[in-house]
Image 1 (cartoon, rainbow, N blue to C red):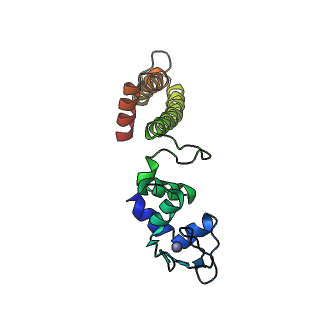
Image 2 (image 1 turned 45 degrees about the vertical axis):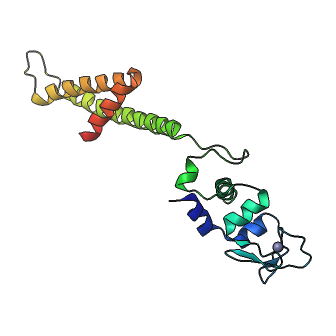
Image 3 (image 1 turned 180 degrees about the horizontal axis):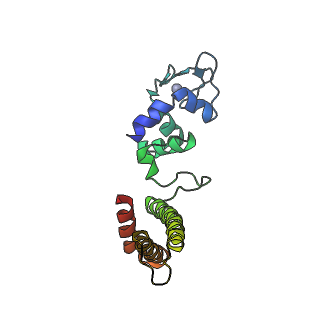
Length: 185
Ligand SMILES: [Zn+2]
């Protein structure tokens, strides 16, 4: 994906002209902002062409000339103003200050990771609760034999306890390693 291509596909010169306050008549003609125009002599559509001063181009040329911006700045501005998301655009700082900046990729990754940890904790709590009940149900009487299920329940209760300890107090590396292991189970 390419920000220039995305912007050009999404926004026509006619859209941009109207958006930036240039009145476009029904025939797609407007007063040319690039020369001292008295009667509409610019045709705007997907592209623009002025029959007075011969200015001609696409939406990037038009908006760039209107605001005296370089092509990349222009593309960013249009993408922001028209809320176009492009792969290029996501990595760029927000052009306008009124918009809340998106989370950086690192911050987003941290947020996702924290959510995954929280999810794992809640699943492990369920797992722990289940095996605790099994353990209670299988509790051997005095001198009784330990059933296979009782042993398994003890193991799983202990395991859940270890996992929870790591997810709640462990280092990030340990957490990641455990999550990978749990996801592969
Ligand atoms: Zn003109």
